[in-house]
Length: 115
Picture 1 (cartoon, rainbow, N blue to C red):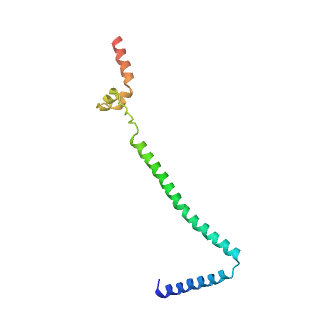
Picture 2 (picture 1 turned 90 degrees about the vertical axis):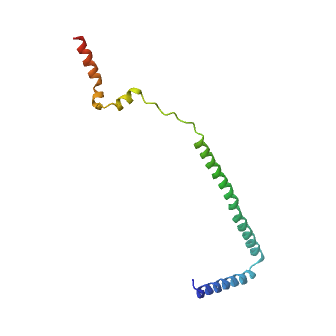
Picture 3 (picture 1 turned 180 degrees about the horizontal axis):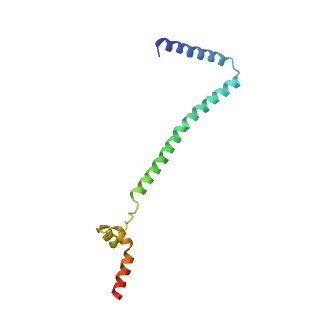
């Protein structure tokens, strides 16, 4: 903002304040009392969110602490141990199609022994 713009803005605010103060002196006493009461209530209403902010922050911190503690102290889940036969199949150099037909080869070997 330029200095000239700031000066004109200050003059405008000062003129508005002077006009409002002048009109305030012309108001009836009951209206002045209601305005004073409304100002006090508005000032009190501005103070309440600060208290609620502390309560909300404390609640969020407690939830975060609970989540971290549950994550840290969760029981260890045992990992399944692979079947030794499965490891043998995976480690062998045979093609996996051989193991799909393993029952057939077993039956064929039994059939040759009987004849």
